[in-house]
Amino acid sequence: MLPVPSPLHAAIVHFPIVLILVGTAVAVAAAFTRRWNLPTIALVVLALAAAGTGAAVATGDEEGESVGGTPAIEKLIEEHEEWAERTLTVTVIAAVLALASAVTGKWPALGRSTGIATAVVALAASLCVSQTGHRGGLLVYRHGAGVLLAGPADAAGGPQAAQAASKRPEGRDDD
Image (cartoon, rainbow, N blue to C red; front, side):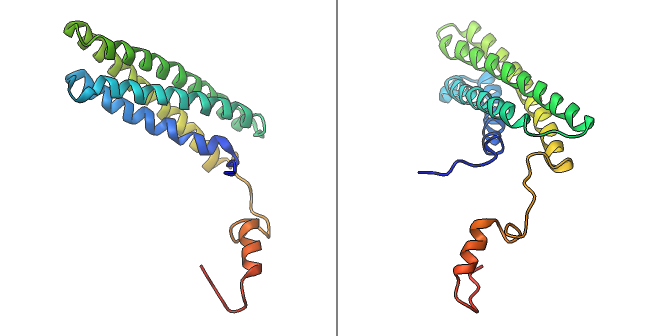
């Protein structure tokens, strides 16, 4: 059985970031051409992005309660949560528009209109996810939120590393 990463939010959050940015690029390309099944590809990527964003919001809500501290950190957590929820909403809208764009291929004018709308909303989702990620980065890298501080056993890479090092023969360095 695979181990569950801890904190889970940090492991999940990068998937929607990448999927939103890739989905936006595909949606913008699909607004200009319907070749290569681009509207359908945009739909799949943006739908996965919406699902991933939902998972990131859910795990962030769980882990956000364990992080606290100063009023500045609390304010930043609140802003991060608000941007995350905006990102989820806008990404779901982009995915729904991508669905409309993918199924309106028989009507060129309607397909073009929904393709442009998808691209615009996907660009908004990219803006939202960048704001969410920026605030998340500030929480982690400026305030240490969600970071486990290393103790003596963790200094060389965690308890597993300490245990593995204790099992190595004398005078042997596998690193």
